[in-house]
Length: 271
Image (cartoon, rainbow, N blue to C red):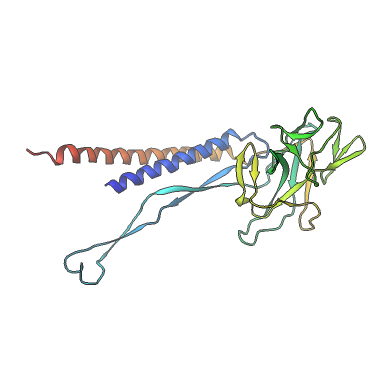
């Protein structure tokens, strides 16, 4: 009975975390370049039950196999959807959409790699697909949160104002002056990236530039933004299913609680 109590509680925790994940997806449905997360639920290792009786116990032979017993479920990991989002036009010159063309496929996972903008966050490189940039007071191209966008040399990109243009390969032309090329990073296995919030990803290890790589093709469109990969309708349906599963586990937990209450207060009562 106690084991079932904890199994139901584990199910409630897993569904609660799944609801939080889906709520975050829906909240970021309109965030440019946001990659929707999906939950991966896994069961704890099952236990093998065997019957032990007087004829077999102690005889050196195993008892009759009864079956397996589940030991609960947990949310193992969250996996972002790194597919290319839809592109929409904004007409704002500091908005950029990174169009992913041909990229190598990871032999280990069978999935294609992904491309990202490279920005500087407190002296460290971070990756993002959110191309909603701006120009700060010092003329540097930055994200909406103030993180500087880096060029292929790892330096900030400085312009004289918002009257600049960007070529297909990300080269910034400011009144005829070459202000540098926006760096584009290639990640062979994006599932290993760590989300840090605000559309930022942290790479474990050095970041590989896609510039000059003959196996990679991409494009950059000024005045456009990449939409999120959130399917609002599907996320709402998944949230309802998670809520129903949470309620079912909650009813099981309450049933075990009532049974334990009767065991303590009634079964052991001396008449």
